[in-house]
Amino acid sequence: MSTVIHVSHEAAYKIGGIGAVFEGLISSRAYQESFDRTLLVGPLYQLADEGRIEQEGEVWYSSITGIDRRNLQNLFHPLEYRFDVNFVYGQRILKEPIQKRQVPVEVLLIDPGHLNPRLAMNFKYLLYRDYGIPSDRYESFSDYELYVRLAGPAYEAALRLIGNAAGPHYLIAHEYMGIPTALRALLDPARPLTALYHAHEVPTVRALVETIPGHDTVFYNRMRQARAEGKRLEDTFGDQSGFYKHALSLRGAECDGAMAVGDYVLEELEFLSPDFERTAGLTYNGIPATEISWGEKQLSRRRLQDYTQALLGYRPDMIFTHVTRLVVSKGLWRDLKALHYLDGQMASAGQRGVFWVLATVGGAGKHAEEISRMESDYGWPVRHREGYPDLAGAEVEFWHQVEKFNREARAVQVVFQNQFGFHSESARWPAGMGFADLRRGSDAEFGQSIYEPFGIAQLEPLSFGAVCVVSDACGCLGFYRKVSDPADDLVIAANYTRLPSHTPSAALYERDGWAIREKVEDSTAREVARALYERLNAPDEIKQARLRRGYELASRMSWDRVVQDYFKPALLKAAAKRE
Image (cartoon, rainbow, N blue to C red):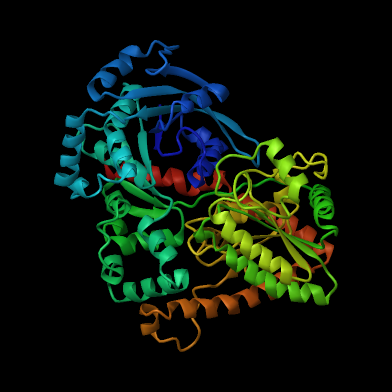
């Protein structure tokens, strides 16, 4: 009976990208047919997490509330006493939002906040002795402490849940958070499972790309130069040992196998350490593949046009979208640069457009009464105000950029819907419209990130015939190029790492890296605008052909294909290395 144990900070509920991966990967037909049992393991952040599981699934055991619906006390009590931790174990329902698939999975949550100090120190000693991880440097980081403390009880509880079941069994450490549990497994000479590191990003690289002035334009060119010279990341960017995520990610190479979600992530891992050259391989993420008719697409476009008419007073000829998190890595300013040039072309042609940005720093949706009050008081989401319940954190700065763009634009207006989900309680909201219409009705989806290990959201509208604008830093671009033909015109690859001719290599190491990026971004934005304008002004018969072709391409990048061609082979290869 094959078991896959996923160790992640998103075991209890979806927070971000890894949660989206779980929804698509685990709910796919190919995964369900390949593996008998799935267990999500992660921290219990708060007591309310147990209630969330009970609300949509079922709690089978809880040392907190005393629930024991499956007579599991003999399994968990010895571990509770030994480690001094709380366990919540049960079943949650994974819901894939685009294709509406739902599958039950086992979930084990652990509260290690009061972990037996002696056992905690013993494990940290082993981490230093066998893997060179100096925990004393990172103990001030609560994040580091949480996942190191989680490792022991997580591994031993997982073994007890597996019991004597025949394998194969796999433990997958998702990102640096799962690495301590994987290392705990590797310390066990009798371990009955194969341990893999699933690299959804390289934290050291993300931190560098986001903070250096030249962002991706500078980083990836410096990486190429360094690799050609046989240098590694710390040779090029200096000592990173003070960064606990760096220390943990490095040890991902100790696992039986490592899965990189994109071509750049694979390069970044090898740039990080030569050890990854023997353990790491590509395992792309997947995207939804849903077939709709031309009529269904037009219905979704009309709903978006109706809502735009109600909010802005005109029906747009072109609908642009960007569904994302509001963080610097998403490069939202690049969208506004491209739309600045597109605005001039559209205005000259007498066309109008709307750009829907669905992004927020908050994790929860706004309440209906809050939306109603903001709409009536000052016209949200067309207008905004700083402070609760509206703009917070990074939303404020982005809104200032949007205001400036909207004042100067003649053809395109940006609507910044800063909420989790796409919905409204307003009377202006078209009947029957929902999040699916935002994906189906879009003409073009932006996703010009400066750091994007894969980018599922960037290609979600591909299945519905939308043109997807992605930067060459996006990992999904490598997957798309493998399944598409040169004649396909559904993806525009914005090349932000192409340097101007005769750029001296020394410039990449100096302060003018910022100026180089600005120059590249401006020229690339012009190219994106020209390409997008040409493709979106194609006749309907070409757009209908794109709808059919988009579904074909998305099917080749579906989660079923990922499981069959990448995920399952990676697990089997890692297991074979142990034999």
